[in-house]
Length: 357
Image 1 (cartoon, rainbow, N blue to C red):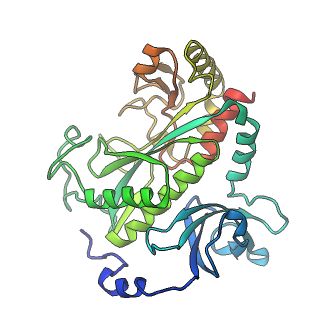
Image 2: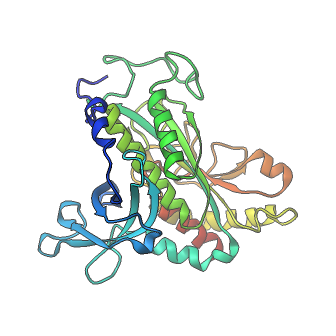
């Protein structure tokens, strides 16, 4: 563990969090910055809002977040979703926001606005999503959490869904994140240790339409924010370590009402796969940064240049789960997105390619 420890002292903070705050509420406004990172700041509300419509628009200095030039730096925050605050508790809330420029157009970092339009156009098809967020834990010194300081752990094999000392790292941190998501109202559906030691995954979904991006971004915020308290830095890089170690992805499960219908589902899934094949490079372009380091055809990935699909094939671009192939309806899994993909972009392009073209 790093000598650079957590920024939160529970013993010092607890008496203050227990103080009566009256009817006033702390609202943590959260947004995605110009580099795909997360930022936040707090506003005091006179009372708890009944809905997003009760929340004020706010602004911030976009020149400090790579979202605006210094001579025209105001960027506006428009609340879009409310979650419970697991850090402050009580009536306090987390507020996910979209970013808009002063002319009323979406900021260059705002992929949610386009995604919302896509989901509204396709709402009759009832698109469902489930994203599998893989990530790697580092300590504050940049060392993989729990790894020997001057060496490496044993080769991959015993760590995936592992149990026991030397096989699993930072389970307390993982459990804290899981419980925080449940408390906040994030639709988290599970967790597991991944193939590389100190690599983990959580799953969010099934979510309908725009909710997919909202819930995954809030889960990411909670992960990074809890990391402050453990002195842990979660990394979303798709290949955080070179060599014979698995990368990190964000496998994206997708279905429509027709795909989920017995007697019709497999034909709809196969038709969607044909459309995805034709748009392979367009998808790769928005499926995350440095994904070429991960999609090599090794370590349970397909080649970044060649599209493939198959039943139960974890080395394919698109996997049809075994049970889906057997029953003839369900969903497909797009295994190409990197761990750092923007969920608004991946969900939007899946719908655009398969339903709106």
